[in-house]
Length: 141
Image (tube, rainbow, N blue to C red; front, side):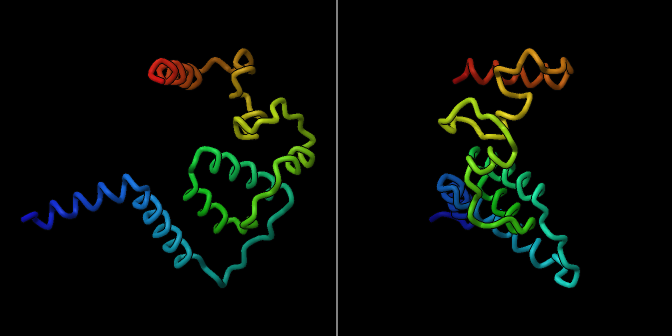
């Protein structure tokens, strides 16, 4: 007969494998933030600029499957639940998107981290470390 400790370990492993444990933890965090949030202090209105910035961040989070983090961002920021269209973002930011296949988040196209902009990177210890990590991941994959 299995002990309570063994049953807890098996349950935890099963929930982790199904992705439910991360969802539960994120949900608990969101509920705690909600409970701690002071309803008497109104949030500042969401400016057009912040709406766009939040949407870029949300698209990045969802692209990388950080859906629980994205759900907390939406709840805390007052961002609309329905995401803005990517083409709308491009028009609003007066941006040019080189790729139409959504293979990377829009935020990456507009950042200096895009592989095609590697020669423009500032040569800092952090960027060297990031480059080494990228190289290690490529050799593992």
